[in-house]
Length: 79
Image (cartoon, rainbow, N blue to C red; front, side, top):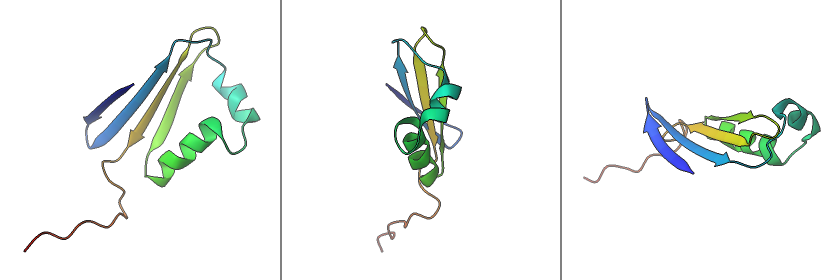
């Protein structure tokens, strides 16, 4: 797993050198869990998840998130 920041974005990437899959086929078969659940949670935080995979070649999942949610309450500055 890798974490890094750039251009006001927090990136989280997971690489799996396993068997991989076809992302298009996977999206057709999903309902509420797995990749669709990850995408939903990332969107709730104002971000997105990118999936790169080829059967027999592994998977790279990259979440791109803002450093903080736009609607999140910020702590008050100490006086």
